[in-house]
Image (cartoon, rainbow, N blue to C red):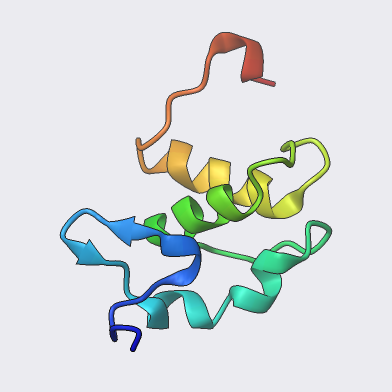
Length: 84
């Protein structure tokens, strides 16, 4: 029987399972590369980056938004080659 702390794709947060409810409101938007999912929380951005691992920020609006969120929150530092 699956536990109540199961998360999509086995993604876990630092102190336990990531809160699934925080992802529910944007899940549909996370699935389509051509749709901007809107403002993301850090845990949502991490999940989106995992879901779109094979995408590039040039072609995938979800990955682009997720990366921007992580950069803005200081969770990701871009190499100078990735800067516009």
